[in-house]
Length: 124
Image (cartoon, one colour):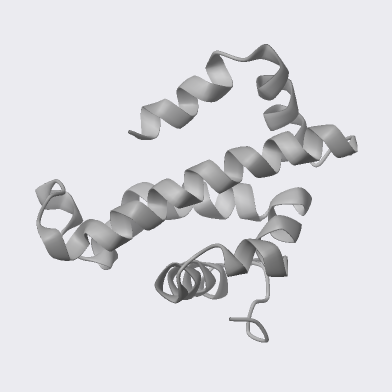
């Protein structure tokens, strides 16, 4: 499933440029920021789906609890949320209203535990 998100970037030259520019901290035009934020919406909705399916035993054995998700997902989550546009997107009230408290707690924990992460102690 993660390959789906890599495929979105690989298959769309415009999104690939936006993605590279966002990760390089280059300024994005408003329409480009919206496209990058839409990509983030889709990716984090997928992460939330994984989180919500943990109790159902429908996932791979590697994902039996959230601590197992640290290894494959945490580095990428931190990578995109450490960007200016990613951090701004994650902190927006609209974004936070779209996700479950369990996902918000998980991501905020990732950010707090990482050096140079976004300070989310006052939000949740």
